[in-house]
Amino acid sequence: AIYQRAAMKITYDTDTDLLYVRFDPAPQPVTNVTLTDHIVLDLGVDDKIVGLEILDASEVVNLATLLPVETEQITARAA
Image (cartoon, rainbow, N blue to C red):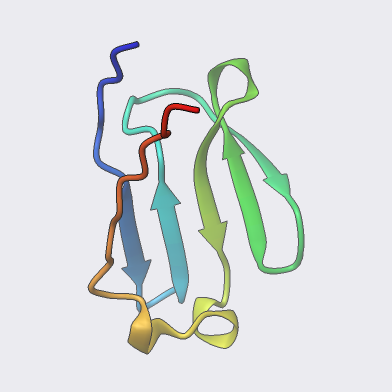
Protein backbone atom coordinates (compact mmCIF):
# COMPACT_ATOMS: atom_id res chain seq x y z
CA ALA A 1 0.00 0.00 0.00
CA ILE A 2 1.13 3.53 -0.70
CA TYR A 3 0.38 6.24 1.84
CA GLN A 4 0.60 9.94 1.16
CA ARG A 5 1.63 11.90 4.21
CA ALA A 6 0.34 15.35 5.03
CA ALA A 7 1.83 17.15 7.97
CA MET A 8 -0.08 17.22 11.22
CA LYS A 9 -0.28 20.76 12.56
CA ILE A 10 -0.29 21.82 16.21
CA THR A 11 -1.24 25.37 17.11
CA TYR A 12 -1.61 27.11 20.45
CA ASP A 13 -3.48 30.40 20.84
CA THR A 14 -2.25 32.21 23.94
CA ASP A 15 -5.19 34.66 23.87
CA THR A 16 -7.84 31.93 24.07
CA ASP A 17 -5.68 29.22 25.72
CA LEU A 18 -6.72 26.83 22.93
CA LEU A 19 -4.47 24.02 21.74
CA TYR A 20 -5.48 22.60 18.37
CA VAL A 21 -4.14 19.49 16.66
CA ARG A 22 -5.11 19.21 13.00
CA PHE A 23 -4.70 15.73 11.51
CA ASP A 24 -6.19 16.34 8.05
CA PRO A 25 -5.25 19.61 6.34
CA ALA A 26 -7.97 19.32 3.66
CA PRO A 27 -10.59 22.08 3.90
CA GLN A 28 -13.91 20.47 4.82
CA PRO A 29 -16.98 21.05 6.94
CA VAL A 30 -16.58 19.66 10.45
CA THR A 31 -18.91 18.64 13.23
CA ASN A 32 -17.80 19.35 16.80
CA VAL A 33 -18.25 16.56 19.34
CA THR A 34 -17.67 17.58 22.95
CA LEU A 35 -16.02 14.75 24.86
CA THR A 36 -15.23 16.55 28.13
CA ASP A 37 -15.19 20.11 29.45
CA HIS A 38 -11.74 20.47 27.87
CA ILE A 39 -11.75 18.21 24.79
CA VAL A 40 -13.64 18.65 21.53
CA LEU A 41 -13.23 16.40 18.47
CA ASP A 42 -13.68 17.81 14.98
CA LEU A 43 -15.20 15.17 12.70
CA GLY A 44 -15.04 15.59 8.95
CA VAL A 45 -16.16 13.60 5.94
CA ASP A 46 -17.32 10.07 6.84
CA ASP A 47 -16.94 10.96 10.54
CA LYS A 48 -13.15 10.80 10.33
CA ILE A 49 -11.32 12.71 13.07
CA VAL A 50 -9.71 15.76 11.47
CA GLY A 51 -8.92 17.79 14.57
CA LEU A 52 -8.72 17.86 18.34
CA GLU A 53 -9.37 20.99 20.38
CA ILE A 54 -8.10 21.29 23.94
CA LEU A 55 -9.82 24.13 25.76
CA ASP A 56 -8.10 25.85 28.71
CA ALA A 57 -5.00 24.00 27.54
CA SER A 58 -2.63 25.49 30.09
CA GLU A 59 -4.73 23.87 32.83
CA VAL A 60 -4.68 20.33 31.37
CA VAL A 61 -1.50 20.07 29.26
CA ASN A 62 2.11 20.71 30.24
CA LEU A 63 2.74 23.32 27.53
CA ALA A 64 6.40 23.66 28.53
CA THR A 65 7.11 20.17 27.20
CA LEU A 66 4.81 20.36 24.18
CA LEU A 67 7.35 21.74 21.71
CA PRO A 68 9.50 20.70 20.02
CA VAL A 69 7.52 17.66 18.95
CA GLU A 70 9.34 14.38 18.38
CA THR A 71 8.09 12.01 15.73
CA GLU A 72 8.85 8.37 15.20
CA GLN A 73 7.81 6.18 12.29
CA ILE A 74 6.95 2.65 13.29
CA THR A 75 6.85 -0.01 10.62
CA ALA A 76 5.29 -3.44 10.95
CA ARG A 77 7.68 -6.36 11.06
CA ALA A 78 7.07 -9.47 9.03
CA ALA A 79 5.90 -12.41 11.16
